[in-house]
View 1 (spheres, helix red, strand yellow):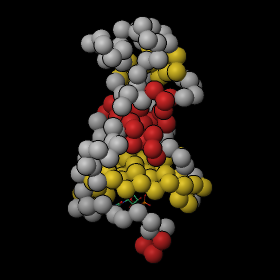
View 2 (cartoon, rainbow, N blue to C red):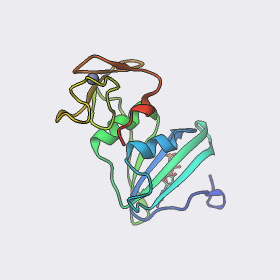
View 3 (cartoon, rainbow, N blue to C red):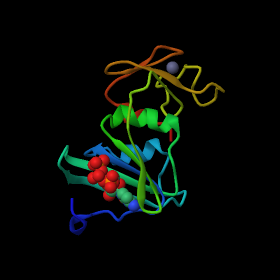
View 4 (cartoon, rainbow, N blue to C red):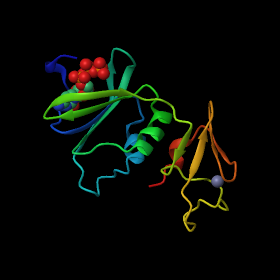
Length: 152
Ligand code: CTP
Ligand code: ZN
């Protein structure tokens, strides 16, 4: 895309999550725990044209890097995303995502009796399988609606 066509301004310092499947940007924000109330400076492009994906979403977060747990959960909803670290307007690091073996925190177990639910001191942990994730404590499986189980 030429400068002329750039839809979302460049950022100075922070993280650009690019090549997110069209329609997933709000789920990316949920994974990052961003709902606007924290005052974060965030730009979002939804369903913008992409050579590689046809349509893509893009999320730019000023002044923030991502934790490994956040990156792990992101890889489940946006396996082809690119994480760009921007420093003084330059992309200084570009990473693709690897599906992890386990994701910890961020997702919550749908089983109300699970030891990882809110009133227990144990953090959630899911094993990542081909098309689903499985709670390592109670074996409850989350399949299609992963984004509905993001702990916000
Ligand atoms: N970007 C940004 N602010 C900057 C630098 C880059 O928002 N200061 C964004 C670009 O708009 C782009 C992404 O970060 O969406 C990656 O930038 P760059 O590597 O320059 O673009 P491409 O080469 O097109 O990336 P790729 O090959 O990963 O598609
Ligand atoms: Zn569980």
